Length: 113
Length: 114
Image (tube, rainbow over all chains, first blue to last red; front, top):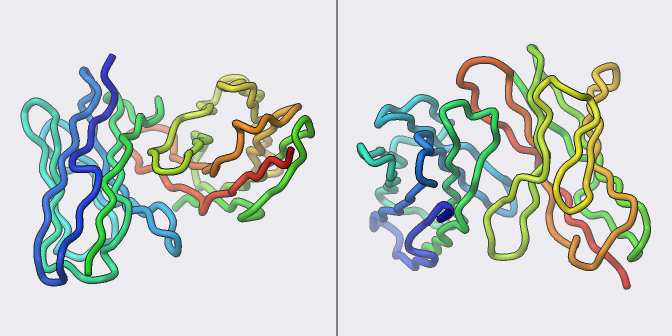
């Protein structure tokens, strides 16, 4: 059974650019959540999608956005990148009821220079 | 509102010694509680979860945790540490019922000394 796949694994972008990260959940999982992980702030919840609808949103500026497609694959986009956006971005999928626990991908390491 | 507090950002134990990682939670409704482990350059892996069934929960890799409502705690233990247990461990809480977001603690890095 394939796990959660995140692409790309590593990215280097320049301040002011935009970036799109991709996540393919486990087959049959319809909920996809995104987290930002940094040494200073730990794991911060970005948003969660279920059946192409954003179901929950964290406290991030509007530069951070996401979407989910009909096959449950999800993308997140960050526009006008700032140095502080450098982080590990983790995608997690779960069955309809999140309380079964997440399955995480290996993450995308974004470095903004 | 919900939150978790992990006591100790770094814990060191000798190989073969007891592992005890502490987690206290705050939740206005009955919580669901989780422990995850993260190895370097990887995502998080679910170790175990409490979802209002048995208060003593057994997970993978020999870990277990006990839900204590009176102490609002969900500490993670393992009788005998192995070198492969060296990783970062995260406690997480979610409100039971409905679609509630999961809140993670700040993590505890476990070092196992040979």
